[in-house]
Image 1 (cartoon, rainbow, N blue to C red):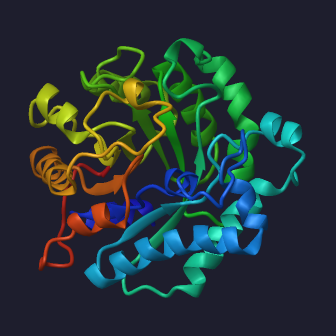
Image 2 (cartoon, rainbow, N blue to C red):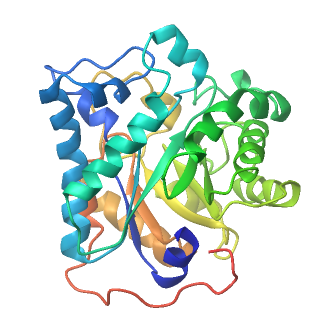
Length: 314
């Protein structure tokens, strides 16, 4: 289903921020380690506030008649954190079921896929803390298997600061029957935060996996960093970006008390430039982005779909 969507549409929307938007509401308290995930259980007003953010993105994509990728709030929901937090062991499956329910209640005129999300073991901005490939595979496999057992349409490993950890997670995902995506955190130099050029990182994983991902994403970065550091054609396996609203280096944004954002029009122009120059079809937002950012990615009028790349892997 994911592969077919990528082959049919030159532009696909992805959600913009969820947890970071909820963090800014004074009446909502996020869990210290599981963030917004426990809100799926309540209180009801907080759960509804989270649902309303997903609903905004669903409605925008429906009006534009563009497909949309959403991801369940399962980031860093490994079983070590679950046990320490004392939440139900089924929370991964419950979070996927929650978002599938939001999709079912909000019928869309566009195709909507729901993914199941995992994140790095440690801080996504500190690659020196990331485990090696074997340790990462061992650590992440249990959550990956739990997510693969749900009706989610695809798996996504996001905010990965190092190539070895990405390789370990990808091994675990390749062993399932789900299509999957790998998303790196990249810096202002366009490299993965461990210093690996993005094109080399994607090539390395493709060469060392029994089943390669459908494609690669970057997140917690700005599109200009990729445009400025890679020639056209160098990022043929990059199929998505969920970009920060700010063009500051991601490591300087970590822990900011207030939302940092460039003018939304400038952000959107950079996103659409990346889309045109590097043929990156999936466009969405990360820290600091809102519904307005998604709306700026939607042109006033455009053909709903046409064939894109024909290399067989998105």
